[in-house]
Figure (cartoon, rainbow, N blue to C red):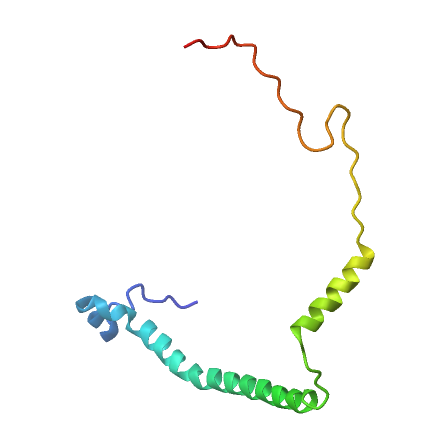
Length: 119
């Protein structure tokens, strides 16, 4: 099995340039990120265009179908329908009160047994 040299990169021109200018170390990463962003831009734009086209086609078809049989909406009419239906089904019922509690509210508190103050 052949033995690889231990310092193969130290003699390369790339290693010498990186040693002189360490800021160049991240340049390949930045180039890949920026390049990928511009490369994927066309794919992303195509995706959004197709989605927008699909949504607008559906709304046009729905508008054509819904405009023919549309019923006029009146808020007052709906209010009276709901209030009439609610009166038939609802009935007020009294709740049984605990013993010793008056019918309307809490019993009055007894006055304190403090002597009256004279002026």
